[in-house]
Length: 110
Length: 117
Image (cartoon, rainbow over all chains, first blue to last red; front, side, top):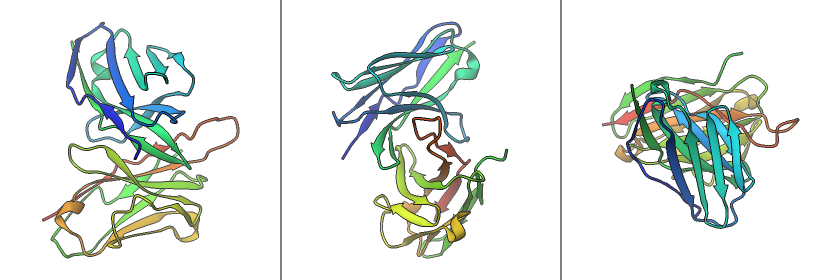
């Protein structure tokens, strides 16, 4: 059974700081990974997709993938109070099936 | 463009009763998924439709759950009879993989919060 592990948090950072969210996965064969953001009471929203080792940047977000160590991370630069949400790490399990971690709650203090 | 919609937003039923959840995917999306999140746990895959066909129902907990997608449009998920452990948030998502996109971006609905008493 493929698994995705995340620290549930909450992770609290001051406004303007870098928030670092981490995720590990159990199946070494996993190839593609997603980061979703979910505001309280709302639906998950895809913010990043990564499948190559290394960094992928999109605006203030950087996803990092290290397949040898089986971890994925998400960095949020210049964190804003509006970034306060639960961040879900997920992997593509093949056949259109997605496996999610339980999420990390991020709180950005103004 | 309308997003994925789900109905109802909340449902409170008693153990043993039947509940039917509905999902309307984004128009034109062939892929439709059902997920469930039990409090404090991860979002878990239940099943995947391509048009009206079930492609993968490996996540369905047991035969008390029945999903249908008549005509390849909206989908329903029926729980009969409901048990206490069925409580949670049921999400529906849809996607249209292919074209220029190299990954399967799923668009989620707002979820139905089901409480079984």
